[in-house]
Image 1 (cartoon, rainbow, N blue to C red):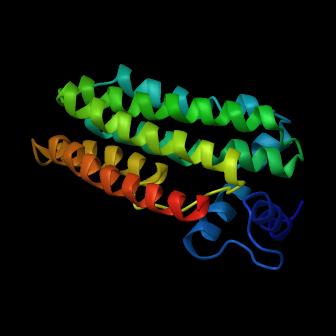
Image 2 (cartoon, helix red, strand yellow; image 1 turned 120 degrees about the vertical axis):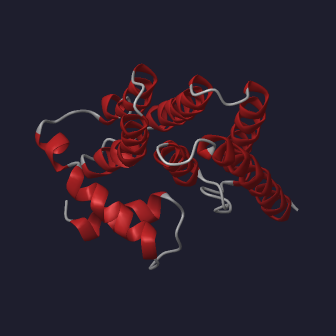
Length: 208
């Protein structure tokens, strides 16, 4: 499969109208994924196994103390997050089970990101609210897909890449500023609250 074929297939799977394809930063990100997963394709590693790379890296972040190492592991878990989907499309092994499995593991990875903040001393109550808001948005998106057939709904200001980058940059900032993680946690809460409102408003329009 060529890169252009991969991008075309990805666009079809994610509900783009016939003749339209993903563009902009998302296209660059997906193109990068296409090339990065080539070793996995050559080794014939299945997409469901590749899915485990993200929580594995995120879990390793709980085992180290250096802020730079934690940031690198969280960022790494974010980078490999799209590898499973790329492998599934390129090897033409996309399945409904794979989609469900990916959704479950995505939530686990996000939980591990939050656990890394908790391990660093961020207030548990704040992190619990952040987790509830982000999980509610993702659960709502899954239900919207089931009911209305909408693949992505609205792209909010606090999707998974933003969440992962917030945590990674928070730990990087902690090297220079002692309250970096606290600020990041509060910022995540604010962005996630707005994102949930965005999603709910979009869902109401789709379901009228």
